[in-house]
Length: 107
Image (cartoon, rainbow, N blue to C red; front, top):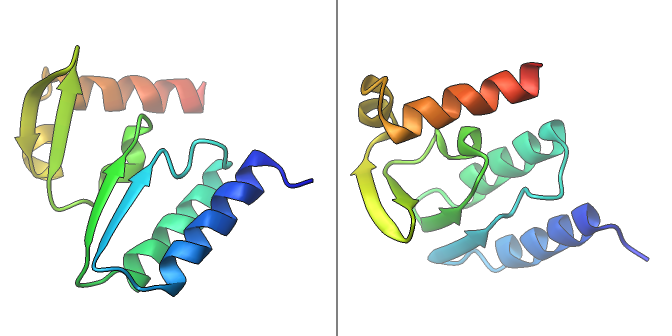
């Protein structure tokens, strides 16, 4: 019996072997520890260079390397820009929630 994290890694490996032009990741790191998630995202970044990757994530630190981030709240788009631009707005939803996430993981 595989753990949920092992199942996620297996599904990601299956998708990456095909070298898709478009890859959709829905909470691809939800059941992984931080180190495993970082490794998986590094592999995805390398293997999918030149591809479109749509990543749905609640852990915001895992989307910081994205070209663009679309932020949803209450089913509405509240922001869409590069991570750099979103982080410049220190009082914005994205920057505020990333700070809170970092406090939770450090605490």
